[in-house]
Length: 388
Image (tube, rainbow, N blue to C red; front, side, top):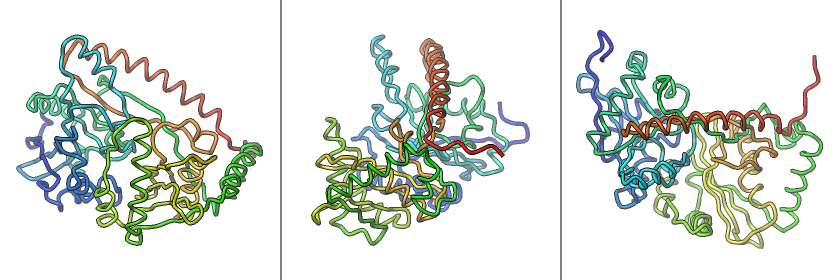
């Protein structure tokens, strides 16, 4: 049922970011978050990373009031569950065992990016009036029209969560580890907040990397040379190929990000004997540093921790950023000063029997994640502050 005195709201889809006027997208999404930039989605499409052939058919949501765009959301019609970081493989396998199709599904998310942020970007006047039940009904109607069997919205920020929370929906939570800058002037300031044992352990790790003859160079935005991008792409590919997986992103994508989003892009390269041996790609947005991709060809002691975490902490402090989101998973981050953070996702499946089974699963999973989160909080390496 529509909200009283509210004009009819419609929901359509667009099969390319280029079919949505840039001015409307930027009016609603802004330009601070690199993963919501119009150019980010253009780079994904122009490079061929998100297209029907890769199982990522753009299907961006467009809300309209009186025919005018009043909301947008990044979305894809998917034929698999790769590159999402909220795992529903077991759900798909259960469908298959019962002779049912799980795919296609509608995914409302940032491709290959498990970072929290706005997902439903609506005009302020609209977001204050639309009810979660109405939004769920619109999405349910949409997947029926698209021939999809479910919809999934991943890693929303608090505002998007409030738009989704009916109290009865299929709500999942997860746990990541993020680093927080508490006014540190440098890395030693950060270390001073840790227990003596953890402080010594991190210093030892950093020293051992240096003793292997490894140093680090940073490159930012338009100053990133083609040869650095090419080397990083090789390292990035190696990360996936070592696990027998196909990389999600290609060399043209990284080049387009450098050319179209230079103010957000940083690359850290590990160098030994004047040769680049490993690299990490990071993006900045608002008050946050996002550690996204890394890779190496040969293994070196503690190189992963230094390249991905300690160099990122150094960069966040230098840039005055308040948070460092280093990506999904990784309990090893906990002992290095990264703190547990609860993440969220919302789901809906059309099949009523599976919907009930999945609801029971998500409730059990939530209890387990909450217990894990509480235990992780007790293992943080920070010194206890003396009582006032």
